[in-house]
Length: 126
Image (tube, rainbow, N blue to C red; front, side, top):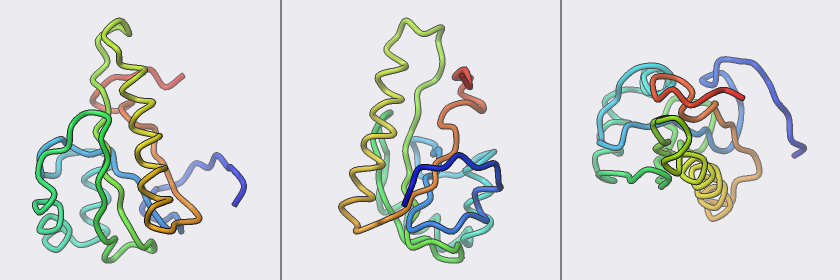
C-alpha cells in the first residue's frame, strides 16, 4: 500500500493495524488513547492491555482490535517533549520503527499512525 497522509478520526480508518499513542501503564486516558478504547470496547481492550503490562518509552506492543475495523492495535509510548535536548527525537523514532516492525511481524500490509506525542506530551507537530 502506498504511503498516504490523511486527516480522519483514526477510529474510522481501515487498516490491518492502528497505532495507539499509549500510556506506559495499562490504563487509558485522553485523546487518541481514549477514542480507541471506546471504539474497540473498553473492557475487552483494557483486559488485553493489562496482560502486556508496562511499555517503556519507544517500545511497542500489540493486542487484537476488537470492535475496530482493524486486526490489531499497536501501542507505543512516545516521549514527553522537554525542549528537544533529552533524546526525544530518538525515542519518537523508536516508536515508529518498533510499531512498523511489530506490524510486519503480525503480517500486516497496512498501518495507521496518529501524530505520536503531539497531544498532552507536547512534541512539536512539525
